[in-house]
Length: 364
Ligand code: F0G
Image (tube, rainbow, N blue to C red; front, side):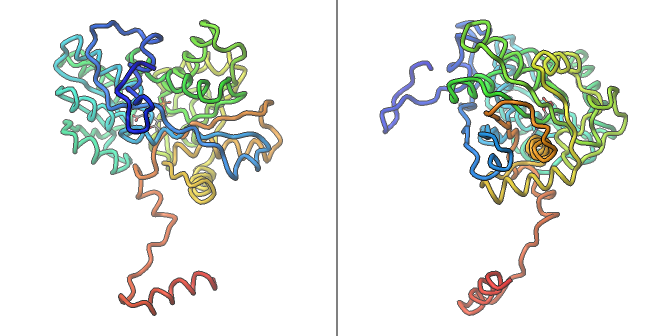
């Protein structure tokens, strides 16, 4: 970690990812750093679900990043590079989180930001984030995969920098999650489980692990478990899905941009792809919230759903230490969560009315 002013406790401040991992990232000393002090997210030991797996389980809580998802890791580097290159602005296609992150970092840098999103199905919280940061939002009547094609075209024809994960800076930045996991554990886990949509993140995690092995920090690398939603599972089906469907809108992707590198990552790691139903995803989301105190968006619950099913089927890959990457915060998508919760009716503002509700819950 590079030096920062000490805080009140005398410990150095976290300087953000680029400064923390500058020695491992392809950045020159002259690059202007656009940061919201992303990274350094909690690696929380499981209290309850690890017991069900019969494994030591940790959660990498990526919702603790500044815009509430792991996308900030790649965005700090991609937007810094755009500023260095004197780009007039950035553009991305998104199921929501990339848009929110790009908008925030572009705002920080004083750059223009264009986000192209599918008109249907993106969680409102993410759209509000992008708008709040002043992005130009273009909802298109098509899928994320079509939006991605349009973003590439817009980048070329409008002279904007693309900040989807086809931009290598995004992948370079996102590998830091693998480094943080290994740094905090003091070793590599045996298994890393994560959701897969456009497949940039699984590609980045593997790239990070390979880099740590190359420099001698790691010897054995973990298996990767890439988890898709059943209705949007091109890696399981072995072909693009024209009309992907899932409640986990973040990973509603039918034709992932990083298809080949993701397959290579999973195969090289001796890992696998797995798919889980929407019901399993929402069940895992509820378990995380109620038994671990971790509220994540549906996509982020997919790897936990997968681990629970594999454990129930006695099919968990070997190894004792498991990390699930919880990619985004639950507050991103409150509509979906509300579908399974009951908002209580108001009562008179008296102690008796409050006590009646409390007692009815105790009785019930
Ligand atoms: N989890 C969350 C919360 C996501 O937002 C995404 C992707 C993924 C997992 C999957 O990561 O695409 O690298 O395989 N969201 C993209 C977006 C598609 O536009 O925000 P991936």
